[in-house]
Image (tube, rainbow, N blue to C red; front, side):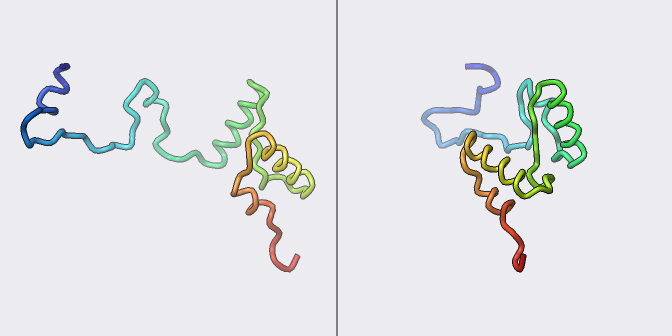
Amino acid sequence: MPSAYRGMVTQGTDRQMHIPAYSGALRSQLGRLQLSRPRTSEEMRKLAEQVWRQRGLALIDPLLIDDDFARQALINEANRLYGRNPLAAAITAQPEGV
């Protein structure tokens, strides 16, 4: 048994195994890449530009599309490719009285 686990697991006694509390940070090689806070809208815009230029992938927020027809076409295509999104109904909903 590795030394890190010695004393944590015992058989035949009423001692409990100690499990450390979740610290919120990933404990792996990728942990250093984890953000400590959510990205801002400006950071997301810059990331979307970078991904488009480097990989040819488009990250498009439907709320940024002013044309109703184009926005709905984008949502319809995303639903077809990736499955329905329950949040899409809120994006396409028209305000009352319009």
